[in-house]
Length: 541
Image (tube, rainbow, N blue to C red; front, top):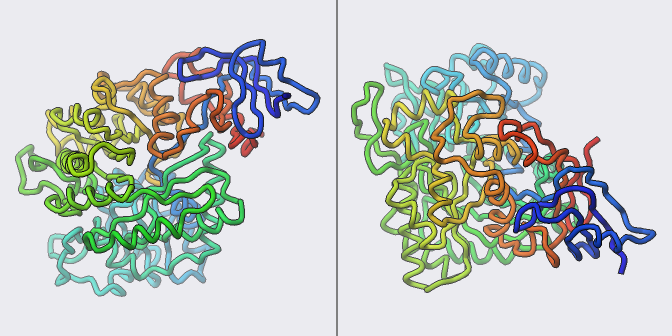
């Protein structure tokens, strides 16, 4: 039988390494992997792709991403390119001036390091948008910058108490200063006008085109539901799955409402059934256990330090009751749900592992594939527990580098010892843990090759050092495996993530072979071609 598609003339990244130079695809699946002998499968209608020395590998998969909010932000007030407070304010002014008909100014993506203490003031927005409310989440979506009009509409003043799961930043007189952290975001976020179903579908398809151009063929959407004013992407996925415009394979992580308990589990069972269609499957539950270190809400075993290096009373926040979490996870696990934990601080990581251990004890071994995302601070005592419990470490490599948010807003408040426990990719791998990888886009770039560069070098693309905890670097093959086979595992896509006979032909051709160059040049690599099921979904111009 002749192949539909034949790749030849370049290295192929297989589970055994770069051990092949030709691959044949028939009927959407890989039917041969080898060398010159595979060329015999070429027929008169076979599409032949000359790799010309470029690397062929499995399609990248993002194990933690938010494409619909990212797509929406790209069409709103996008601050991701602003590096200073002045640039951020200028971008808001230009956007607002160009859209006088918008009742709200929405968007986001500002960098905490652009503002003193990571908390921008309302007066900066008041000066450029005094008459309309402004709501702009930062790039990690754990804080929002608002103006006085937005605070007024929400009824937030000096007498408004902080919500249990958040904080209203205040000035010296006690007045709200213009930054809302974590659950406090919802005080304004719930007032913002929702996107229309058509807007959400367009955002999804825009994001999908962008992700395919980066070689991403599948992903896990880490938040399917309503949270802090973010639009629920469920309807967009279902519409795209039904009309065939969803070309990626997507696993949806249903949002665990942290203000409720086990009574929501039957609703999650119903949603899993209602939302699973075609290339979209909603078999995961997302449990957000804590916040982020930069604003002091990541849950730590020991207190944060203050600016002078002294212990404070703050150990961060636990958004899900740690005493109840094991029972929740055990019940979800028994129902066949995968649990996807946001666990950033060492206390949140331990709570998540304790819950997985309780589920294993209650239900025995299973194939639910729990995974912990972010893992900024992991206590050394907990590293070996990942492999022992079968919990995958879901890493976001771009964050594991020296940059202002790390050096100015994190390390000083963790202290020297804990700062060395950050993003322990190498230690986790050496302990036998399975690694998956993702971006958390729009928090950071969704480009896997940028993340792989940092995973291997522990230096930002284009940066010259110093290397951030060099003992935690990964080899290139291990980093590629995390973005392919590792993420395919947590996405329950067992016939993807590898170049092997019988696997689905979700494949990527790079513009070079990164193994042939120095590690410092990995970020210069780009995607040339992307295929899903043997169908081309991206080709470089």
